[in-house]
Image 1 (cartoon, rainbow, N blue to C red):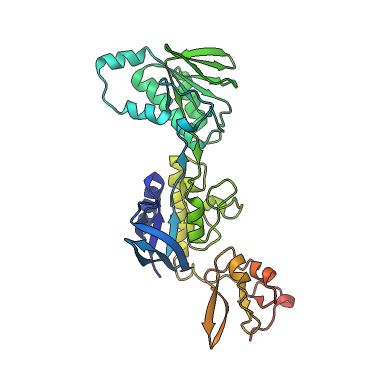
Image 2 (cartoon, rainbow, N blue to C red):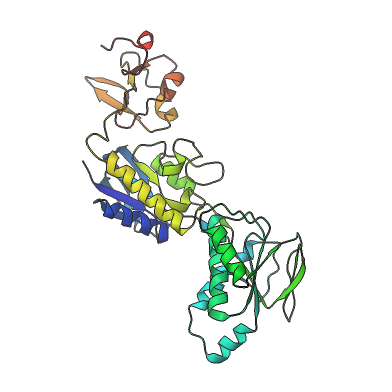
Length: 369
C-alpha cells in the first residue's frame, strides 16, 4: 500500500494537513499550485492506494505515484480596492494591515498616540461575515485593547455567534471596554480628521477604520477540480454540499480529500480539526481492509458494451475506464474506486451494466458469468 500522500496547496491550511498526516505516520509530498509552480498538474489517474498524479515539470511530462491526495488550497481575500461602494481613503485599511502594524516595534511617542486613538473594526461591512473574518476582527479588537490601550469599537450587521469560543470572547471584550454596535446601511464617511460611522445607537467618530476583507473561492478551483476528477459547488468552493461527505472532507472520488477553507467556512482552529479528521480517515482507508471494494459494485458485460463512453463520462467517482482484456475493448469498473451508486447503470444505453454484491436483493441479482 502506497503511504505517500500528496498535499496540494500552500499556506496555513496545507501546513496543518501535512502536519496531521505526518503525525499519523504518512509520508507527505507538497505540491504547489499556480502558474509559476515547478509542477503543473494535468490529471489524476488510478484509484485510492495507487494514484498517479501526472503533470509537467520543467516542460517534461512526469508522474508521481501516491496513495491519496489532500487538497488544502484555502480561499482568497477580496482586496479593499475591489469593493466598489467602499470609500477609498487613507483612514480605511484592512484588518490584516492593522494586525501587521501591531507586530512592529513602536516608540514611546507612537504608543502614546495610539492610546488617544479611537479605532473601529467592521466584520461584515460589505458581505455576510465568514468565520475567518469574524475570528480575525474579534482577536484584533482584543489585541488593540490590550497592547495599545486605545478605544475600540466593533461594528457588525449580523454577528453570528455560532462557535464555542465566540460568545465568551465577546462577553470578555465588552467587560474590557470594547463597544459593539450594529451597523446601518450607510457607508462610512471619511474626512481629513476622521471617519463618521452611523450605527443603530447613533453615530461615532473614529480615527481609523479596519475592514475585514471578504473571502471568496480561489479562481483556479475549476481547473484543479477537473484535473482531479472532483466537483466544484455552485458557490465556487470545491465539493458540492453533501450531508454524507461534507463534514470530513470526502469527495466523490475515493482517496481524494479536502482540508480547510477550500471547502469550509472556518477559522484556523477549524482547519486544524478538519486536517486531523481527514488524516484519521486516511489512516483507516490506506490499509488492506480500508481499500476493500464496496459490498455492492457495478459490473460491465463486455459482450454488450458498445464503447460509447457514456458510463465513463457520467460516473461521478471516476471509477470507470476503457480497458482491453482477452482481445475485447470495453468499459471496465475499478472496484477500489466504485461507490456502487448505480449512476452508470441508469445511463448505459444498451443495459450492459448491472449490480453485483450481497447487499443487492436476490430478485435484482443476475448470475455473473
